Image (cartoon, rainbow, N blue to C red; front, side):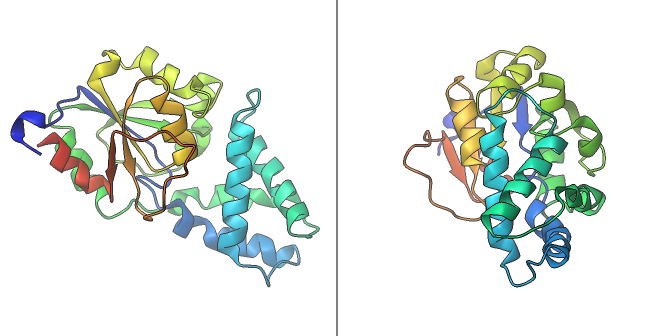
Length: 226
């Protein structure tokens, strides 16, 4: 990439969970305790978590409900899928873990450097009070949540909220996120420039739009921005 091809966005927005915050590592213990109490101690907590998360994403397409309600419904469905009998209100253990979620090691320094040249936003499929429990870098100045937008990323509702509140043109925004089914699907159809932060090195699904950039981590954004 030549110097002339470097990006110069006025605003860089980030997905939070899985992009800035290690939500999987931070929540496996909570889900393990949920499984143990629900007769599922023999199950692979990672497999159970991924099924639960996929159910969340499916519900994002439906008429707006708070993230808390979606997570509880998805847990109920996941219990049924794995043949368990559990109380879906146990999802509160997941929410209780939010305060302990850790930023990925490359996040704070990278965002601080980007903030020297661009405004920083977060765009998250979350309720406001839950996002407030998570420690984010102080350079974040715009918080776009599903609660504020009354909708989620995949159908574009949350990204339209970003566009309406960014204070800059669409072409001046770079969005970085890890989720194929929310960041790529929701952002690309609105014409946003998308950097897919593929920390886990997963293959892109054939029906998911091609991102403008695919990067291994957040720190790699600095190579795009110069």
